[in-house]
Structure formats: C-alpha cells, structure tokens
Image 1 (cartoon, rainbow, N blue to C red):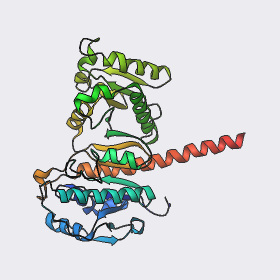
Image 2: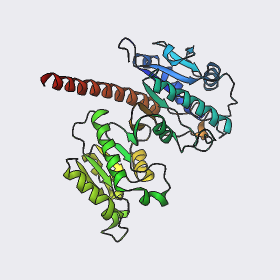
Image 3: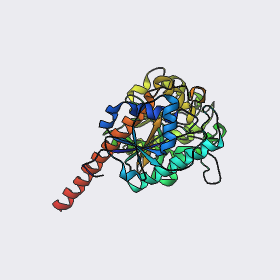
Image 4: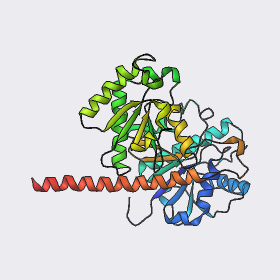
Length: 348
C-alpha cells in the first residue's frame, strides 16, 4: 500500500432487502469516519441513492468505475451493475441474493488485486445466495477458496475472542469432522492470528470439550479423551500454550474465559451463543488465517426491521475499526519480521 493514501476499506453491501446497506451507510454518515479510512462500496450509484432516500440517510458520495480510483475524504461507490434492483425490504428474494453475490465477488476481486486493503461484508442470506455459480454456506467458505491461507471463523471483541473448530457443519456431523489434523491446524491458525493480527506475543488458548462435561471420562462420549486430549497434550509438549478440554456449560458463566487470549469451540452454537450473549452489538466476525483482512458485523439480515431505519450500526462500525486495526497490526508485524530476517542475513 502506498504510504501517501489512507487505508482503502471495501464494503460488499449484502442482501439489499436486509439491513446491510443501512448499517454501512449509517457508519459513514458520520464524516469523521473518513479520517480513518477511505470507504469503497461495491454496488451502483442508483442502488445506493435508493437506499439513502428510503432510509433518510444523508451522504454525498463519489461514483467510480474501479476501486483503485477511489478518492480519499469521500464515500466512494464502485458501479458493479447497471441494472436497477427491485428492492423489497424484509423479503428473501432470489434477486436480492444475486446482487449480494455480485457485490461480494467484485469486492473480493478488488481485495485480491490490492485495489482495496480491507474488506467488510454486510450480511447475506445463506439461502437466496445459492446458485450454479455460487454454492457456499456463507462468506467464510467462499473467501477460503478465493484467498490464500487456512480460514478460521474468529468472533472477536477487545476482551473475548472465540474461534470455531467446525463452523457451518450440522451438529450430527461435528464429532466425525473433528480429527487430530483439524485441531492442530485450527490451533496453529488461531495462535498465528493472535500474534500477527492482535499483537499477543505468547497466546494462551482454551479448547472446549465436544461432549457435555467433556465426556465425563467416557460416560457421555469418548471423543474428548480419544481425540482432543492427546492433541492438546502433544501441542503443549511442543511449546504451545493450549489447555483443556473444558466443560462448555460452566466455562463462560464462571468467567474462566478471562484467563485466556482465545477460546476454540468445537462447533458453531457452542461458541457463538455465549459470544453473542456477552457481546452482542459489539462483536465482530473476523476470518482469520487468510492472506487478506475481512471482517463483518455479528448479526444477520434482520429482515424484520429492514427499511424502517431502526437498525443499530454499532457492530458494523466495530467491524470497520477492527478490520483497520488488524490491517495495521499485520503490516507492522510483516515489517518487523522482514527486518529481522534482513539483519540475520547481514550478520552471516
């Protein structure tokens, strides 16, 4: 990234019938946000104009054909499509899903090309995005295909960080999906992210048990004793600060989570229910382990309030600030580690 420009923050607008545009536009209705980054929306001038009018939001924007033409100090709109979408707030339509994917694909392409530095994704509907061209459970799986690295769904706040061993996997398939290689990969990814993206030098990571009470010594399942414990022991012997498995039902209520830099949950609801209970509205979904930075708010399309101007944009705003901070931390980490390598070469 050139030092003489602000960080370019790309925004995929999500489901046009949901609250995605609303929370994103409300975030940048405050012109002070332009001091921190240059926002680039992937949609169209007419689409954004419609949303602004419908939601009574006041923003003057700058239309551009390419993200690398974005102007600092302005809200920029990349014209991805010429059509005028039929917006029906609160409804899950195939049309809204298709435009959500057009926005996402254009934003990810710009991210890969370096035309934007960070991507923040507004919420999509996992049903209406499905097509012959797009067959993924959600953002994370698509980004894992498009960007280099090992993806990890990482829900973060300043004080709580929860990663997932399995994310969009049916509960009946969770135990068979958790194998030693997966555990090692996810622990390594979360550890590397804590060091590189959050500046934590020696991260302490807790693993939650797969079964109730971590299996109760095999009475309620053997996976914790036969799969989790041996890998935790092996990784601990190799110098990783990894602990567990902990019984998930009491781990958060007893404040045990405060002793660790991150928690690795066995499956989606085990990690996300306590995370959203403790930090809803302030939490951010970060896709760790990839070659580029992507964050999103910790909520969905919220069809029930879409188009009414009632959406709280605090989580989207947090997603913006978190994405920017991770980008800065990662840039600094790369500079420091590359300098170390250069110094070592000189000494030899």
